[in-house]
Length: 97
Image (cartoon, rainbow, N blue to C red):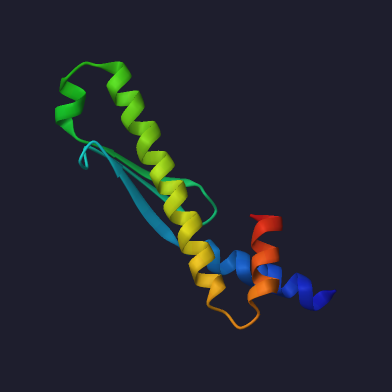
């Protein structure tokens, strides 16, 4: 059981160091998240702010955030699917993340 807990902690530690940036609106909105799915940074181009269109900005933020989460999930699964104990790693990822 200690070995399992060690593996889980090791995976969590590695995942926390992953970062991706999702974009929307041709790069007008960029959101960076880490492997713990915490938002690290939001960048909004001045041009979109100057439009004074709240709904467009909201849609672009949601879109960039969704892209970020999809990319971080892909990166996590890709990293751990290449490991030797594929079934074990996938079970841990599905259960804990």
